[in-house]
Length: 190
Image (cartoon, rainbow, N blue to C red; front, side):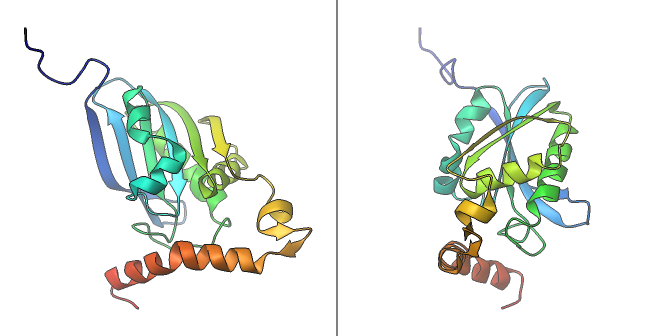
């Protein structure tokens, strides 16, 4: 007999791109959702990043999101405020606590979510997790931050209390410079 369709370990996914998720101050953040095609409510794994949710290489910093979705989770991926497809202005770290808590509450309220949200990811994705957790969102049940810090004043952006201007300039220009120019041109401003 000839087998038709995907192997049994592969399931079909529903992918929703650039959903508009409104934060408490009215700013809209672009959010993608990858989930199994099922009517069952699922736990969510969330990633919030400033590096462009459309870039598969950068998404891989958090793991294989398609594999996570095929394992039975709804995966929510969001461009941070002021980056790529999201509105607002990017102010690293400062908006992540409130925006993260709002994003978690939004995901938990969706009909495809069972009310349980976990987070994952490396580097700045880890920072978004720690900062959102400071708000103690009710739906947040698990976190998996790695290659990151929970202490911004003595290990990452600051060393012994001194602001690391060289590190921050390199990170900002190399990571966001070209992307911000493209974003502004797309919005009709230079």
